[in-house]
Length: 89
Image 1: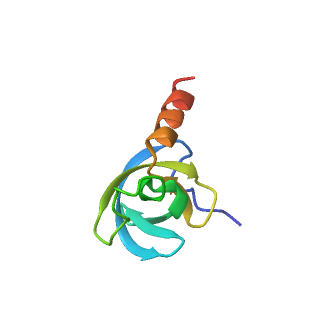
Image 2: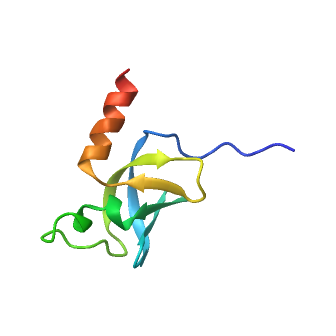
């Protein structure tokens, strides 16, 4: 049995579009592949002045866990910065 390669890599940065929103997070898509941003990984969870995600929003994210289905992403600047540091090692 062969497995398909994962479409995303941990610590990878990409731009996504929000395709669905739920009370626990947002489903997003990049190049036809689906991912998920947990509510605590969206800036609106931490900043009341930031609007919550809406369908059609474009976000810059980092892949936190490419092995999950769907892959888990973060739109937090702090997570993006950590991923950049990890990629530079």
